[in-house]
Amino acid sequence: MKIILQNAVHLIKHTRLSTAAFFLHLRMKLLFCLLLLLSTPAPAQELQRIYNDAMTAYKSKHFPEFYSLIKEANRLRPEHPGIQYQVGVAAALTGKPDEALQYLKRALLADADLRLAGIADFKAIQEKPGFQALVDWQRKWQQPEYHSDTALVIGARSLHTEGVAYDAAHHTFYLGSIRYRKIVKVVEGGKAVDFCQAAFEGMGAVFGLKVDARRNCLWVCTSPVPEMIDAEKPAAPEVLQFDLSTGKILHRYPAQGVATNAIFGDLTLNASGQVFVSDSRNNTVSTINEKTHHLEPFYSNDVFQSLQGLAFSADGRYLYLADYVTGIYRLTLKTRELLPVTTAADVSLQGIDGLYCVDHTLIAIQNGVKPLRCTRYSMNAAGTNIVSFEILDRKHPAYDEPTLGVVDGDHFYYVANSQWNGYDAQHHPKPDSELHDIVVLRAKIK
Image (cartoon, rainbow, N blue to C red; front, side):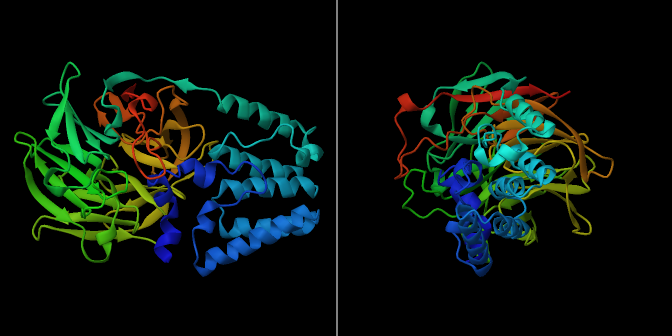
């Protein structure tokens, strides 16, 4: 049951009870964390009980008790914006305006659509200068801002693309398909053709992929999900190495041991070409041992709840890891020391899917916050603190859950509309008339 608790976010995300259904649509005071409703371990049950008691106290207008209980819930789940919002409500109702504004701001950083104006519970703080400033900030943050242009438009609407890779030597993009369990390549001029056919040699849904130009190969991580065709047929989670010239599979690296239920969501290469892959179900980073031809566990930590993107620092000393719930971490490769990446900037580090390192900055594709955005974070010299940020895109009109991307020289390319919501409740794809052409955006980063 520990697996369910740690990974409910990811399971929600990839069964398209969207990320918004997890921790972004907690707008009204009587809604609670869907994660808890799906989890049964004792810590989650305790949190559920405390939250329910807090809501009972709120409805009974026992506001000091409400405050005490919701603060305890926040202690147990400090990263949860829905609970942070509730703390803001409780603080406002018990004469703590500064604390109320502090918690409301933290909640809004993850979900700028949480309601402030017109809420009766905020009557006592509405005349405070900080409250109006927060309302003004919220309105500004809700506005679209985008600096990218469109690099690719692919008419295969039901392809359902999560990842994109680029072969600079041949000016070719590679897009993976969740739905059809295949890879397409897009050559100069925008023509898209199959690199491999659907369900090629039994492989599962295609998530992250990377070109290894030095070896002339394409690394691909695949996993079985309900949205893929022939989902009833077994498909092992695995990492595949394709020959770029022939399209043949050179090697297969299936999940080993307890990780045979893995969801391999993304992968990256270090300077020597060693492959590292994230498993968001078991919250483990694995690597390929090329001597044994096995995929082996490299690092795991109980702090992780849903591992997603990963990226090496420019000097190769550190591996940056994005956890969908708790933020960004820096892992020292030599010592395996893990440190959280902190920030005092007015941003949320939650809801990150793709993560990329460029010089001394991190580019994060955030589809678990609202508005959806692609953000570039500048770090301190140690690479442990974000000192400033810039929005590459926010609330882009092409967005329908942006996911993964690729850096090429002065530009960053990323999938703008993976369309994970393009299915009905039985995981059948919606008709093309309800979907959109696939869009890959391009942002100038140098």
